[in-house]
Image 1 (spheres, helix red, strand yellow):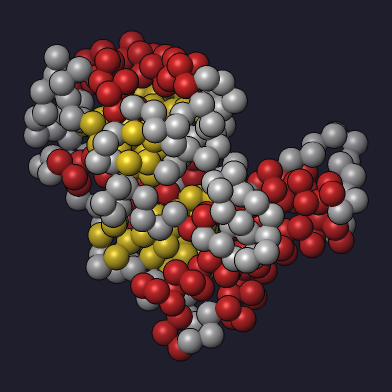
Image 2: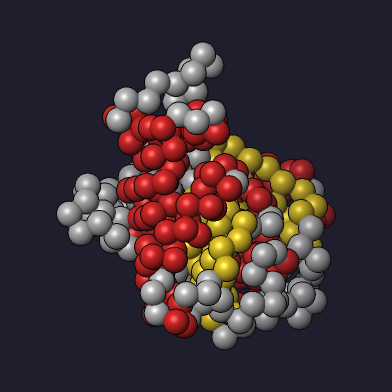
Length: 324
């Protein structure tokens, strides 16, 4: 059993619809050891949890001394999450519905504290600490990948909200008569702008994958760079949905910047240029009109760094550098 202690080392867990990763993160944000497995997103709750447990045990085996010194575990999970009950019900992991993730994780972590936040909140904590939102007093940080998640920085601090979900932009409705979303809503940003939906729309509209057979958003991006009009239109539609969600957020809470990361953001200006263009249409009020749209800096490590940062901030671990 490991009790909480004023340590500069925190364990982190990043759970998404595609992969589950864990790491030991030091007070400078460096990942000292890590483990990773695919997430069996279509499996039962127990099968998904087995992958999570396996990753944590691999991490502990990779650096036993570091694992023993870790003062807490931070979890950034696909959401929604409920930090108050320690449960999760990710839209993209149907086997987890009100799943008691924190209790299950404690079978491996022992007595050390566990802090649960949404993956977008974790990304916001990371980018505010060491990335593109550093020094910003108000920002929206977004993950555009298998799903679309987000987190907020408000008054110079990451803001998780009562249950750990604040800033979950992927499930803002931007098309009132749009397609049903797995979350139960209609016309959500995620249903339009996520990687699988970019590819789904392009295929439905007549796009044909190239010789490599890549029918994912990355394949659509390659076709768009080559000038394919259907591929370009699918990315433009995704950018329009993201811009509408960013504008709605800016109107509500006066953000300075929208930081976009995740696999789809790897498309670069193919995504960012139309987001900025559409934002000029949707962000009409003066105080919302000058939001900077910038790429995230921390890449695929943002979820792990941010989960550790969120845990350290919540628990006040003194040797861990404060985010921002």
